Length: 206
Image 1 (cartoon, rainbow, N blue to C red):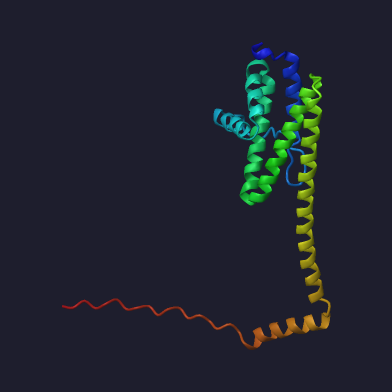
Image 2: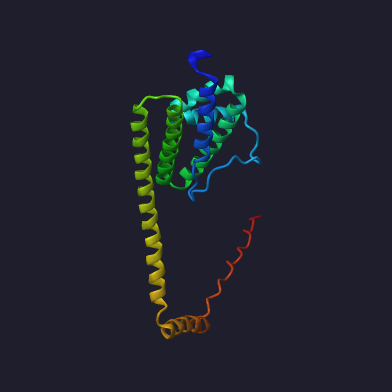
């Protein structure tokens, strides 16, 4: 096989990437699963999926290219999952550039971790363990940042709720304020808007 890639190696990597793709998370951290209702892949979608991989994890793109020849079923599944992940991230980007950057970073870390774990399963190179710990540390730090931001957003929402509750603490005052507003509508009904007067057509001179 080209480049000395054994069938066992390709199979291990294929399994690893299957885990990596399924580990790509939505905003609510629900694992992404391939939706069979999604239209079948087209050459355009396949190209978009591979472009996504080349842009954000070139080593992954190279691996998938090899799978296309030797393990077509795994290749097709990987491309579908890649396309789905890229589309999900594109939707996130439309809502929030910051969330997109974080979720893309998480996807890249997940993908690199799975690849490295697969390499460790067929290699005795001790350097791989240090690389894996480094990536895991980066993922933990990224998750910490995400949770801190989530907590800040939740605190902001809670502050607004507390403010609304405080404004409703004096029931009698709130009722009186609302009562005056509705009574004012009765005493001062909205003025009717008169329709514009129709202009008479110009009289033609003889």
